[in-house]
Image (tube, rainbow, N blue to C red; front, side, top):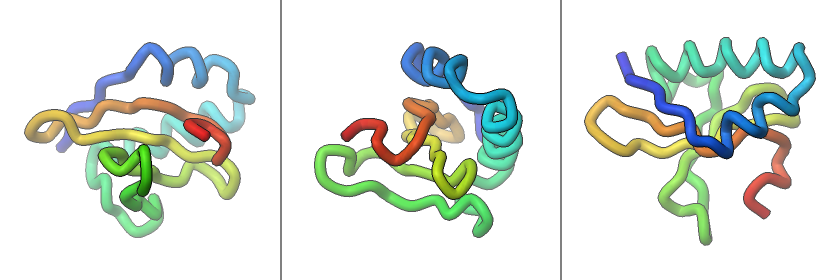
Length: 86
């Protein structure tokens, strides 16, 4: 099981989401904690300036960007639509 840490940016962006998306994001985080590469999360490595990060799906339009920082620890960096970090 992975330990989850939240960045200040993630917390700010999370508070701005619709309630339904927030609930879906919490379910996704629970799934990340168990297995970050579960097929339904569609976890993938990002490219370019974000090459040290991974992304997983919350809904069709929303994603969570995260990184592995220590053994069994995930730092959630951002949550939102695909324009985040652009």
